[in-house]
Length: 640
Image (cartoon, rainbow, N blue to C red):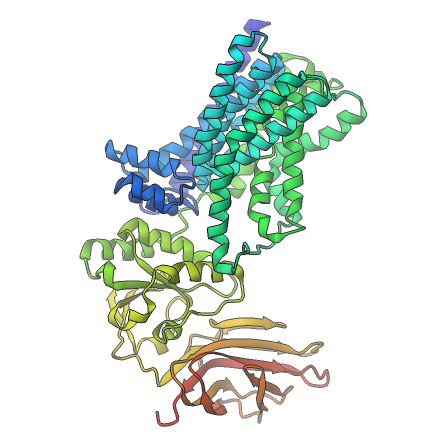
C-alpha cells in the first residue's frame, strides 16, 4: 500500500509540477511585452518595490502600514541584485508552488488517507485561487501562503495531547497572524474568520473542550486586532474621496461565479449536497469542520455583494478562495459507488484528469488574467521618457483619460508611469478642465475616487507653470482627434506636451463621443469622414419608446459671455432635440434635411466660472425616428 502510494504520488506530483511550470512559462512567452511581468496589478507592485528600495521606513509610513510586506521583500531582493521585473516573475510562481506543497501536507496529515492525498495534489496545484492570485494579486497570494502554515498549526493545536506544547504552538500561531496581517490584511482576516467559525463548529460537535476553545478563540481574535485596525484605517482612507463611502462596483454575474469556481470547484460543490443526503458526509473531524466553515464563509461573503455593492471586491476574493482542494480531498474518496474511487490507481488517474482538465480551462481563460496589459508602443514611449530626460518630473503632470465604457485604466496606466519614471503628478480627465484648474466630473465611483486621489497631491493652481504630458496610449480617444493637433507638441511617437501658448481658453472644442458624462437610450459612436473629432456620437432608432438623453460637462474658465454651438450632421426630419443647460431649457434643435454639416448655436449668454452641464434630449414620438449625429461642442467667447 505504501509503495503504491509513493509511486502514484510521485507520478501525480511530477505531473502537477510540470503543468504549473509549463503553464506559467507559456503565459509569459505568449503575453509578456518586452520582457515585462504579467498581470493587471503587477505595475503597482513594481512601483512599490522601487519605492521601498529608496527607503523602507518612509515607504511603510506612506503605505499607511497596509500590505507592505510583499514590496518590502521585493526591495530586499533588489538590494541583492535581482531586478524587480524578474522578482515579479519568479516570486508569484514560487508562492504558488509553496502553497500547493503546504495544502497537500495538511491533507496528508489531517485525513491520513492516501487517496485524499493524491486528490489534494491535483486539486491544489490547479486551484483557481492560486491561478488567479499568482497572476497579479501578489500581496493576497503572500498572505494566503503565510496563512496556510498557520492553518496547519491551527489544526495541530486542537489535537495536541501534550499540554506543555500548547503555549508555544499558540505563540507561533499569533506570530503567523501578525506577519500575514502586514502581507495582506483582508486575506488574513478572512482565513482567521474561518478558523474562529471552525472553532465554534468544533465546540458544537464536541470536537474540542471548552477550555482549549476559549484559549484559542481569544488568542486568534486578539492577534487579529492589529490587522483589523490597519484594514479599517485603510478603508477609511479609501472612502475619504467619496465622502466616507466605498465605491459601488457592479456585483458579479452568475457566469463570473462559474468562472471563479472553475471545473473542479463546480464538481465538488455539486457533490456536497449529494453526499450529505446520502449520509456519507459528517462533521466528524476538525479538518472537515474547518473546510465547511471556510466554504460557508466564502459563499456568505460572496452573496453579500448583492446586498451592498461596495463590498464586491471582497466578495470576489472570497469566491476565488473557495477551499476547492480541501473539498476535493474530502469529497472524491467518499464517492464509493465508483470503482475508480476505491483503488489507488483510479484515484491517481482522477488526480491527473483534474490537472489536465483544469489546465485546458486555464489555457482558455488565460488572457483575462495573464497579460502585461500594456501596448508595445506605450512601453516604447515610457522608455523614451526614461532615457531622454525630456521632462522634469517635479514640474510635470501626466494626463489620463478613460473610455466612457471602461473605467479603471487610469490607475493602472499611472502605475506603469511610476514603474519607469518614479513618483510623479497625475490628472484624470480632460485637458480643458485641467487647463481651467478644475476637476473633471465623473458619474462612476471608481473614476471619481481615482481623480480625487490624483488631485490630492497635484498643485493644480500651478498648472500654467507645469509641463502637461499627453501619451496617446494612456488617453481616449487614441489616436488623438485631429482638432487636438493645434496644441499638442510632439516629443516622440505617441508622446506629446500640451503647448500652453497655443491653447486658447477663449475657444474650447469638446469631442462629443469621448466626453459623455451620462446617457440614456441607444447612443453609440462610429468613425465618420466628416467628423473632425474622429468619430460621431450618434442615435438612430426608427421605433422610439423613450426619450433618449446624453449629457456632457464643460468648464467655463471665467465669469463672462459665451456662445455654445454644436457641429452636427443635418439629416432627415426626425424627433426634435431639446437642449438644457444646467437643467434649464435653452433651445430646440430641428432638422432641415440638407445632409450636410452645420454648426448650430444653441446658447448665447453669461456663464459663471466653474463646471456646467449641457444635456440633449431626443423626443420619443413613435411617428418619427430618433436621429442625431454629433461631432463636437464648442464653447467660445463671442469676440473670438
